[in-house]
Image 1 (cartoon, one colour):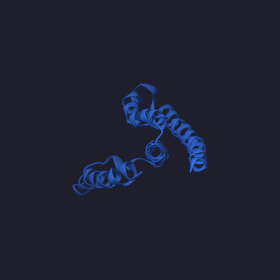
Image 2 (image 1 turned 180 degrees about the vertical axis):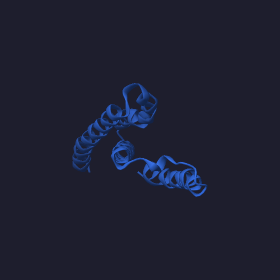
Image 3 (image 1 turned 90 degrees about the vertical axis):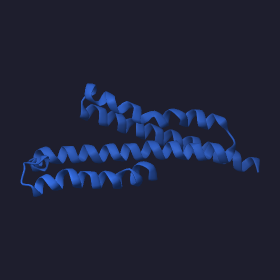
Image 4 (image 1 turned 30 degrees about the horizontal axis):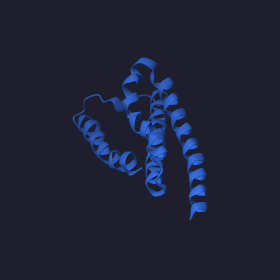
Length: 130
């Protein structure tokens, strides 16, 4: 969660400030001058992408920790593909941003449902063993 949600987002914020603020000061045209009808969908898709990434990476981390705690290697095998979700980003240019973001969000929701069910199952079986 901290990996994508905070540790990557804070430096990216400074990069965006440097990228957009200094051209604005130098009075050159900026990409921030989009009309509201163009800017809001882009902002919404960016928020959806960050939220989807947070869902998938949190699911990945939770299953990894649960695998270590319960000693079940099967959970690592389930969590392993979740770590490669960033590999899908180059395919965005072929699918289009809207289609890609909704596919990415759907994958995030599937990971969340899978983690909840696996977590509930393995927590209940591990508590019966002790």
